[in-house]
Image (cartoon, rainbow, N blue to C red):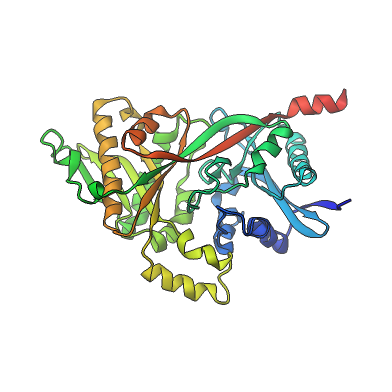
Length: 387
């Protein structure tokens, strides 16, 4: 019988092991792309990601017969209550196909949260709703995309055996670039009724502090009615802004203005997985020179609309429709200048956010990936144990 140990992540060495679990246990599985360890450190490091100031949290690593076999993280918000979702959450769930290992990890997280008064758990949020969300349930062999989580096909079924049920699905769309897109005219902003009202400008990375305030304001307004929403802070955006400067193309970020007021924004990123997938997550000793060279020379085939938002006051108005159409057309225009790009991924969008889904689907985009957020009633489990 295998020996399984669930060990709390305490100290630097354990944290470094925690970050590299996915690339070790999923190596060679089709559809999986290992993320750079250094990027994982900035996402999951409590001293580097301001998100961790708003939660109490604990992480665990699973070992089977002395080998890394899985990981999980639990957190509970100190003051914020996510809209419609539990403040008690799990994330960073990665595990080999072994029910005993998964059970050990979930039991550790559930017990920790229950001891802090939690009656309901939702996840995975890695580490939050603005990070990597859900368990992949459709699209296992699609193109691996930057900042989009990957899960093996067995994970959702294993979770459901442990009493987890669907809370929400989040959807990513694929838009294939056609010759029509490459030759498209100016679109709605050239129409007489909108020519003087709609303006589009590039985000000024040299004034990123000022731009960040505007972006965060639009973003929070746009998503504030969505399930699971917690405010996205200026500090959280600025924590990633320096990285964005290195990977975002000069015209990768844009703002749509209506009658002189900023109403929408988008940030399009090249799919860095194309140039990092063969590095195995490591930058040293040979990965960093390769990465620097590829950043300068690589002709990307895929990109992702990674951040976007349209003020909610416009969602059901004619002017809002014009802004959304201008937003979609601008997303196309900004990718077609890269003649090698074959498709752009839009994601993610909540399944019940029809105001966003409909215009995306009318543009010709198709569902590419579906991730599922799960929930579980912890009070029922606790009552069953004491009965």
